[in-house]
Image 1: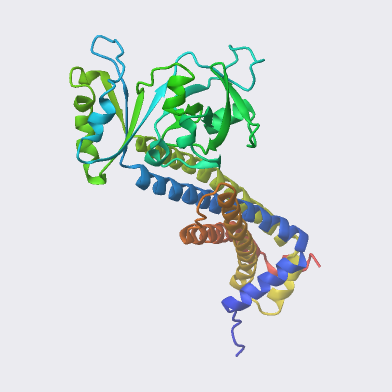
Image 2: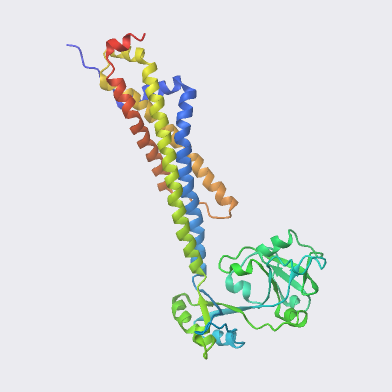
Length: 396
C-alpha cells in the first residue's frame, strides 16, 4: 500500500520561501506594504511613549508648583495683587520657595530704536525676582540668568519666543535690544517653559533696573511658589485668603501641572487616530498580499498539477501558498518593526526626549503582520487546494 503524502510545517514554510524568492520584485513590493504599515504602528506607539515619558517626568517635577494671579471680584472688577502678598505666602509653613514677576506697562521691546514703537511683536516686559528660574525649574537655552550685576547694569533675559521674534540667534557683548528708551544687553535666552508659557514671550529685567531705568513700580502681577508635595491641595485652598484677606475672591490660583495633564490627554487622542490610520494601512497591505497570491495561483497552475500528480494532497498545496503569504508577512513585519523602532529613537533624539520603544508595540506589530498575512493567504490557499489536478496540468 502506498504511504500517504506528508508535509511538515517547516517544509511548507521552506516551499513558501522558494516561491517568494522566485518572484523577488513582486514579493518585495508586497512585503513593503506590510512593512510601511507596521513601521507606522510601531513608530506611533514608540514616539507617543517617549513623549509621554517626558511629560510624566515633568508632571512629577512640576506637580507642587502653584501660581497666583489677579482675578476678578464678584462684581467683575479686577484687583492687583497686594504688595505684601509674596511675604505673606512665604510665611505659610508648607511653602518652600516664592518668586514673582511684575509686568511693566507701556514698555516696548524692539531690536533698535529705528523700529516704530507700535511694532512690539507682542513681547511683554517683566521685572523678575532672582529666585524665579529656580522656582519654576526653567532652563536656559543659551547665556546666563540675571545675577547681581543685572541690578546695576541694564541687562535682559529673553523668553524663547521673544528671542525668535526679535531675531536674536546668538549672544555676544554687542547683542542688545531697545526697551523703554534704553538699550539693554541680552545675557541669556530661556528654553520654552511648559509650566509658564507667559514667559516665552517676555523680556525679563531685574527689579532694580525696572525701578531706576524704566521708572516702574515693580508690584507683583504673578506669583510662583513651590509647596510640599503632600500639602499642595491644602496650600492652594488657603492661598486666596493669604494673598488678599480682604478680597480672596479677587485672587486666581492655578496649578500649572494641569496643562501637562491636558497634553497627556491630547496625545492619547491623537495616538488613537494615528493607530486607526496605521490599521487601515495594514489592511491595505494585507489586500496586496492576497492579490499577489491569487495571481500566483493562476500563474502556477501547472506547478500545482505536477505536485498533485506526484502525490501531493490538496491540503499540502494549500499549506504551500499559505506559507508564502506568511513568509511575506513575516518579512514585512520584521522590516517594519526595525524601521519603526529606528524612527522612534531618531525622533526622540531630535526632540531631546528619552527614547522609549515598548516591547509590546514591537510584538503587537509583528503579531498583527502575521495575522494579516494568515488572513490574506487563506483564500488563495483554498483556491489552490481546490484546483483539480487534470485542469491544472492542462496549463502546462
